[in-house]
Length: 208
Image (cartoon, rainbow, N blue to C red; front, side, top):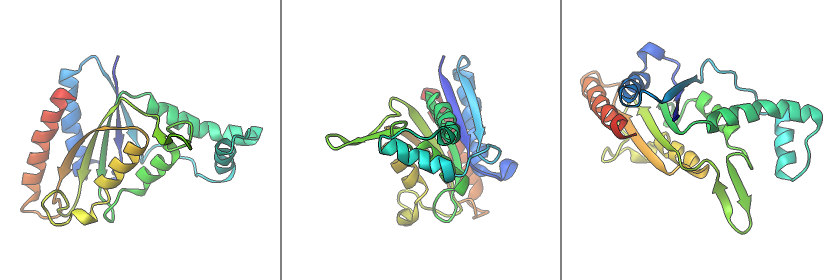
């Protein structure tokens, strides 16, 4: 059975454009893939451990081929659980707003927990860095107050989509679909932006 993991990164909930379009996508997806399971990870209601103390010491022990102490292993187990949950998916949907041209800090925190050597990427002098989360597809549903997409003139400020593709690509993702909702801060253009994103979300859901 195929498992889709939906990762929600906006705290605005019913007022969030990215969540609104994600729900459109998931509604259409469930119609077509009724046998698939959909797991929702709301990052604003998920406990994410601080990456310090015994956790970071455990990471460096692993990186240098040493055995973590029992206390470090216990702390590191929380990271392993988060990574295992993420890697259990076959397909992924992220919904996220643009914050200060980039991504919400909760999502960055989550990613910083996921991207760990020997778990989601490897390194060797012969191969360099190699992503370990492979053969999976992802949809990025990105809301932005201004216009930063192709042809907008604001592409250089887009550290939202570019970062997500870069970091997910680093851990092995190669199949991306992107749904842009922009500009959401212009009352005259927002309805058209939402409708355009809705139609694209429904289209992508058909073949995702």
